[in-house]
Length: 166
Image (cartoon, rainbow, N blue to C red; front, side, top):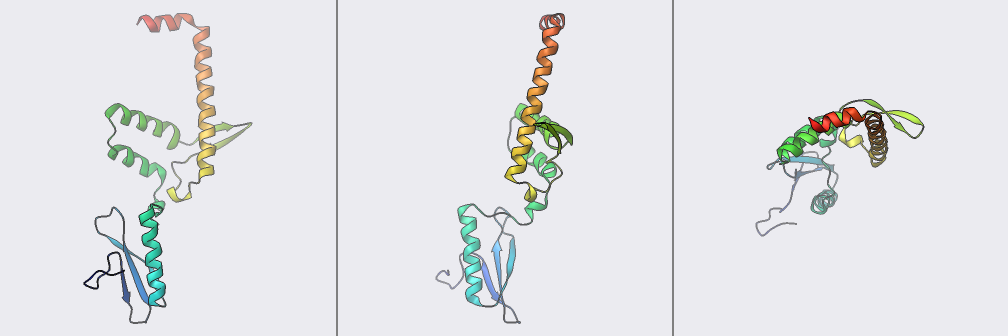
């Protein structure tokens, strides 16, 4: 698609000396940076690739191919720090991140135990199934810890009363 001056409204297509066509598209939220999405044998194929790329950006289904190389453990602290959370929410999220994401620990899932560590995995490799398994394990571990706390509190009323009065 071109505007009245013959310039494209989105991306660029250039003919290479080899006769192939190179397509460059803007990277969303990058301050004007562009990236190549490849070379194509015909201008029509390049136009089609550009249209597909624009469609994925417009519909919100575009995924940065280089962004998936970052691990969740590296991405999450930056996200929490720059997301505009209030102080207590930020502190809570940082604590939960350290407790459940960035540490490797054995978590019970049913009768088995799995080492579930999403923190060291690249974002692009984390699937919905990984998150479901992790969430199931975290919920089970949280229930187990809560039951243990409740049991300790029930067997030690002096400690509970002392904590209440303090």
